[in-house]
Length: 428
Ligand SMILES: [Zn+2]
Image (cartoon, rainbow, N blue to C red; front, side, top):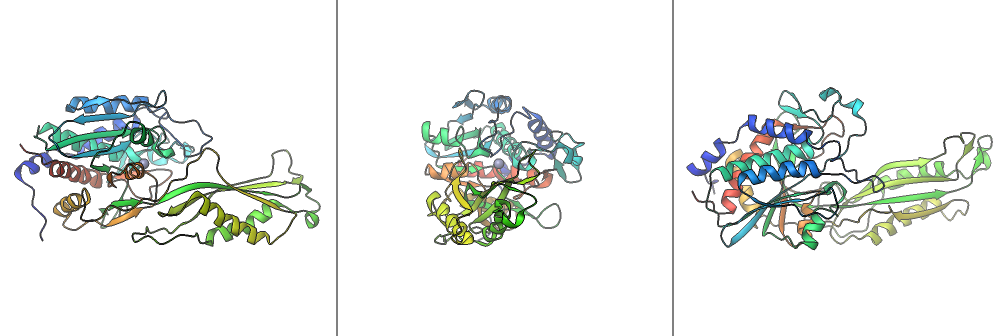
C-alpha cells in the first residue's frame, strides 16, 4: 500500500517549518541555563538544576496556547507539563528532557571555539553540548508543536507536552516522579531523543525505537596486600589481578532469555573506570583496586541479582580459589537498576502512524529497533504507555564536539508535526 499523501492542511503546516526557525531555537535552547543543566550519571556528582531551561520551555508552550504546570520533586528542578485539551479520543504526549550531559573537558571542543554551549555550524552539522542529546531534538519537537498549534486545529484527543528533569540519571526527579507520583499516563508517547543513523554523509534516516535495553552500574573491589615496589615477586597486587579480570569481563556472557526483539548490543560489560594506587605512595603497590563498569544491553527478565551473580562467577573463576586476593562485587551505591522494556508492536500506535508519515516524507519505511540507552521512554513503558523514541540526534553521538545534522532535524520536525495531526485527528 502506498503511503498516504499529505493533505493540503498537513502540507501547509509542514511548509511553516523552516531551517532558520530550527537553528534559532536550537541555538537558544543549547545556551539556556548551562552549565547548570549538566547532569552526570555518576551517583556521587551533584544533580543538575534545570530551572532556567524549564522556564524557557514553559514560556514557549504558553505562547502556543498550552496550559502549563511545573510539577517539582526537588527544588530547582521543575518538570514542564503542557496540555491542550482535545476531544475524548486517545491522547498523545511529546516528551523530551531538560538536562544534558555535563562537559568535563572543554579544551577538546575545538568545533565550538572551546565554548561547548556556543552552537556552531559547520556545513550541515550544528555543534555544541546538547545538540544530539537533546536540545536539537527538543527544538524539532517545539517547532513541530508551534507549527501545529499555529494552525489552530480541532483535536480529537488531548495533546500533552512533557519536558522532564533528571533524565541523564534514570529519571528519579523527572519521568519516575511524573508517572509514579502524578499518575501521568497518556495513550501514546513519542520521546524526541536520538535515533538517527547514517552519520554526517551519505544515505541517512531515523529509526523508530520501539523498545529500550536496560543498564546498571557495578563495581568490583579487589583487595590484596600493600607491598614495596622492590618486591613485586612476593606481593598480591590487585592492579595486576584487575588487569587479568578485564579481558574476562569483556568476553563474559550474561544469563538471559533472548527477547524476540533484541537490540544490536547483547547484554555485556562496558568498563568505565579503574582505580588503584594512591598519590604519595608511589613507592608501594596498593592493597585495593576497583573496577567500575556499566552492564548494558539488558533485556526483559534480567535482574540486578542475576547480573551480580554472573559477574561474581567470572570473578571467582578468574581468582581460582586464591586466598591472597579478595573480591567484592556490588551495585554502585546510589545508582538504579534499569530493566529492558517490552517492545511496542509495529501495528500498534504510535508506531503505525509514525511509520506511515515517515514513509510519506522519506519514501521508505523507518527501521524499528531496540535502543541501547536509557531515556524516559523506559519510564513511560513501565507505566503502561505505548511509548517510543524517535529523534534526529545521532544514536551514538560524540562525547566531545557533539553535533547534530541540521537537515535531519528539520525533517524530524515535519514528521512530528504530521504525526501529531494524524494521531490526534486534527481538523481545520
Ligand atoms: Zn537524552
